[in-house]
Image 1 (cartoon, rainbow, N blue to C red):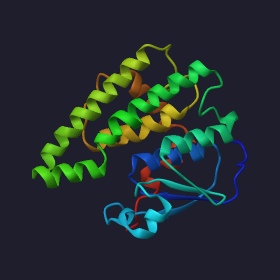
Image 2 (tube, rainbow, N blue to C red; image 1 turned 180 degrees about the vertical axis):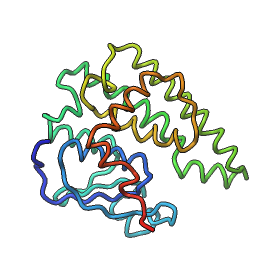
Image 3 (cartoon, helix red, strand yellow; image 1 turned 30 degrees about the vertical axis):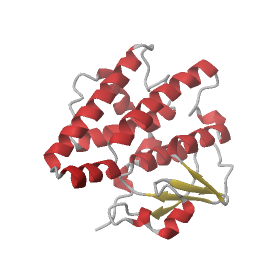
Length: 219
């Protein structure tokens, strides 16, 4: 890993947030050390006035880099990719970058927005549905989205990761979504390419260091 170009990095993080998980992976891939400030979504910490001064959307993650506040996980990862071009988060070729973005957006912009905590809380409150209905919702959107991702992978040459033989931004998006899929027992048995990539990511130190289990509340 390359030596970080940044000196003071603070990540406002919730351990199970897919978006925060993505950024943790990217930081680890870039060799960037950071301080963690927990923002407990279940307790509504993201809705408070003090947090909204950092992130007007009231979302995680927010990251502070040498005094600069950055939001939106994919934008943060692209910034890290530009700051650490040798780490390969984004390919050097324009067409290859488009393909990595397309894979990343298929998860971060198509699956994740309809399967996050705020959406499920709204569904539960508005329609009075229970956990079974939420599970069906997740099965539909996560399952449909990941099967589409599998189809996108099949249009490419076989590789260890989502695009090529080293991790890219696409993998930082894929692994958190797979974590959610496991939590909700989504059937991935036909996603052979995804499952092979998942195993390769699991063996990589950066993905291990960023895993939610490393940031879960103690006790």
